[in-house]
Image 1 (cartoon, rainbow, N blue to C red):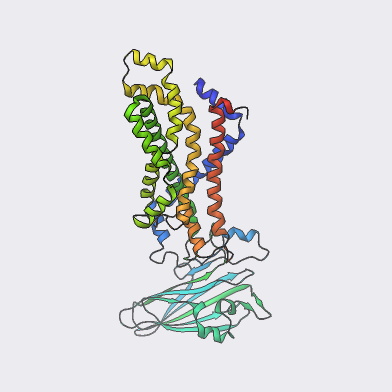
Image 2: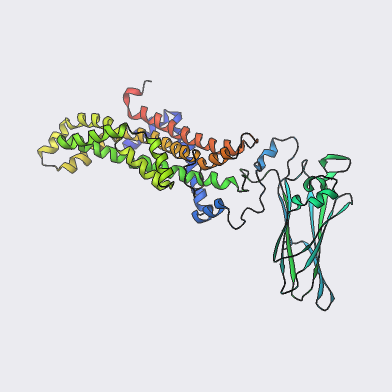
Length: 445
């Protein structure tokens, strides 16, 4: 208890420890939130984007909170579905002949035009497919005939890609022409719009359902990418991946290196000689090029990369540092006393030698975690990241490949970069402060 109290008293002297712990706690919270709200299988499915998961999300949309900084309010995504309290009527005209009318009504109060417009229809019929006629009604009473369709079981009407509609709108693209104010074509007309779908059914039991999407230019907490994926998924799941990778790599390499250094000092002779020769060879091996070769010619799995990093880190420069410390510990009086009463080699190494330098190990371990986090992100930026997992480095790689900075999508780069900076800063503040606490020679610096 006294040791804990003394440690707490020392920590209070260094505000950087508190700041580092707050940043690390924030990352841990993100990781826990991601694991609870988005299970692993769901996260992989969302990131791969199969089964048209992101069909109703806009492409390359900025985060919705950007609207707080814009003078003109950018449009958010509007989705209306026929299953959700929409004006829908079905009328029987004759035996086997019915009408099914759907009226989508929504209020548009934004200062810019949508990025896209789409209408998704589904129909249920046995032999005779339903027909639909689609019209657009503006707040000032204008009406535009958009299309006449014979529906398949699933039909996608990409309004923004309808060239015939564009010609009827005087050459303007539909997402602008349908919303433009006649008195000021550069601005959308605010008010209540209607999309009317008049369906004709030719069988009893036939039905039509529809959903209309006006894609916004801002969407979600973190925006979207070129594949319409919500970047929140990768930003959240990047936290547990980064922390797990950093901690496992630091623990695997540090603890194994510590044990090898202790064994080399205690046993000496040929054991020490072999460990030192392997250490000398590994120290001249370039870690990053080796990992690049593994990713290119064998596997880009994050677990394979983690294994390679631990294997290369075991015989790294840390062995020489720990070896010099253990040489001093070996000559201590309590080690001689342990040998005198017959303690085994394993007990001396793990009970008396290693715990002696644990205080020095802790700060080094803490500062090693962000270095491995950045290494994983660097591999992903180079295109060698895990192809399955959504990570911060993968976001940066996608942003680079799609020219995010050149096209003005800065959020795509800045958000994962900001989280990487938080990870590095948090562990660095904590590690450097702990180094001063555990190393008396640094306390006056």
